Image (cartoon, rainbow, N blue to C red; front, top):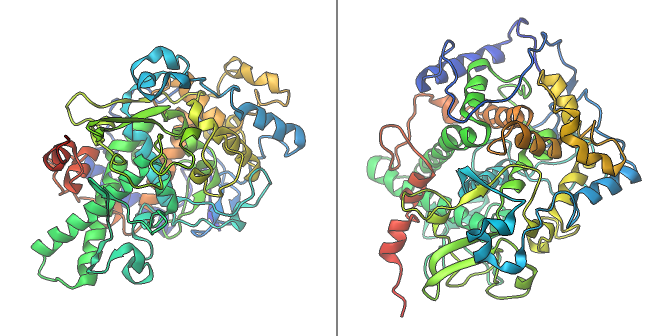
Length: 541
């Protein structure tokens, strides 16, 4: 049994609590956030917060690292799971409905990037680059995978298996290791991961039918996530070379273990120092590191994946997806390759016109200067975190859906999942956290559905609306941001192998200087950065 709600600040600590706070205090001192330090306001205000009274000892719920659980087991569902509510959720999330940005898809993928007027309801976020979305998706695929719960049918989370470990340990890359997941490893060198060869650059290893041979099939849903997976494969393999060059112990098991540890720690570092500050703001990160977690209270030895995070708050990333992207600068017969993230016109094509995954062709690689800032002026921004989603997400290819079944509108699927998990409303969680809830007028658009969503709002929609109203869409607000940050940081601080616990003084070593390390450094070390691409890309006639 685990406690999953705010704990009384004055209650006695058990040994696990004491150890956790000591680890956190040591980590804070090492990164310069002490108990008396003020939050570094790098990303604007966290939001309006009301001082909460001391919380009583919470009710408990069964949690397990192998299944889903709840942060707020005592809060009631946002709505009754009846036909009227189900129909209202489908109506909210339908193509052309409330959430559809109605991007002008007929203008084509290039114009949708260059002409903001074609996506007037879907404005850019100047504080995020386009790659932030897909790094976030990669993180999601590392920690949560629901393969069995029925969509829209109330299901007990503890009875539903999480097919990923609730740890930021890259099991989506490494599988169960070189022995149990031998298909993921290079038969010529079992310390290294298997990498496929595309016509121009690396690709995911693929079977004869084109399916990716990787630790999580979702990392081949589209070209960008597939490119990230390939970058992690290459980063690990280069780390293998580095370990062999620096370590006298060259046994394969030792080399693999050390390379995996270093790869994972660099990844965890980027989550703490780059990703979380972008999506929740540095003040929120500092507050949680300094004061501890108020909602996600997993014990040191047993993290779990909460449905409030998995089914709602962390799905904020759907709002950041652009309708189209420039995949690379020269892959399409010497010209840039632009494509919709998804487009029904690509169905059945060997080399699809959109950016869906599952195919190998000369132009199907990622030029990362579009997605992360290498200082060359080529990077593109994200979309704001708000209640409008890019129109292609309302008609997903079945191959991009883990169950390969409908509905194909992503917002419909996400909203129905609130019934699956009987999630509490955003207002109820705000009250429990002592956060000022959104004003009644902020949610007036939900009155049209006639089932009370304006006062008891589905948590995912509340998270998006809160970001839009409180943070102008630049980052998450105080409810969504706290749940997202507390869970991700909690997964680290409950993992004895994470760098923040095992070695809080650790600093990245792969191509970084002065203790800094960002996604651009990661891509350079992996050898997929623009400079390396330019040096090795074949000339086009």
